[in-house]
Image (tube, rainbow, N blue to C red; front, side):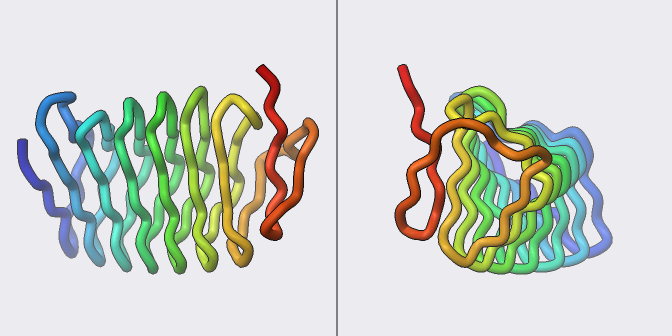
Length: 153
């Protein structure tokens, strides 16, 4: 159980937060870099303005927030983990696997997203900037200015 802080000029590597029993948090501030972090159940990783997270894995109900001015590169989200990109935040090369969730708020940016519709979930508000590694296929329903996949089963 604890809180990790990665501040200016600091680099963390290989930290696991959330141990399925206790709540743990990591905060990455301006000039800080978090590499290869794993976020599990009970864990939350917050990347603030000027902070960077590289090669993060978010799984088992873990949560990751990219705040305005924060950056996440090469994130993998799976098994009910959730990546939330708020307005002004940027996520690049995100992979959303089985039961993973990615939400992009209006004003947020997500580029090169790898996602199989109905396997994981990617949702974005009108005004979000989202590009995909390949064009999603399937049947979609448009509402609220956003296209949503129609999943069977």
